[in-house]
Image (cartoon, rainbow, N blue to C red; front, side, top):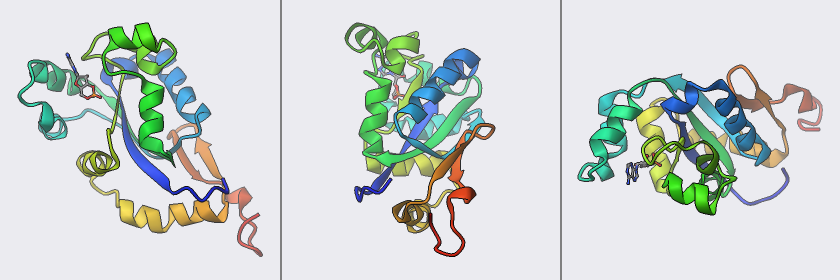
Length: 186
Ligand code: CMP
């Protein structure tokens, strides 16, 4: 990773019906890593109704709002902070269109095209802008400081250190074996 394009952060949610299906979950993990996105934070938790309400506040007036927040708090979700060049757009491209019928028709190889069940159970969520990502990370990763992350992990990336995926926590950590103690970075 020697490119100088700044890393972007985005928030991804693998929704409750996906977490209940280990095969689909594994396929989505593979699509994340194969597309070069790095997992900065990862947690599995039940999103509470108040969190879902805050998270989806822009949809409060929509006909599907109750259905959406009830579903999102119905069981554990995998919530990820992803990093990469143009991560917001890249993750949205990997997910495909919000509406599953449209995804199945026009983008069958995307996550929603493959694994979406309905417009509510559309498999995954992704931030629509870097500003939304910041807001969403503050709701679901209260301890995460993106400014600090930019000053540390990102500058490590710029030095060329490698990120290694820890399969158990599904999170990328700095690969210690890539660090040359004398010269800092191999
Ligand atoms: P998500 O990316 O989580 O952001 C908003 C969510 O609202 C969206 O995915 C869908 O799950 C849901 N949504 C959007 N449009 C509809 C719809 N027409 N009917 C039901 N749910 C919808």
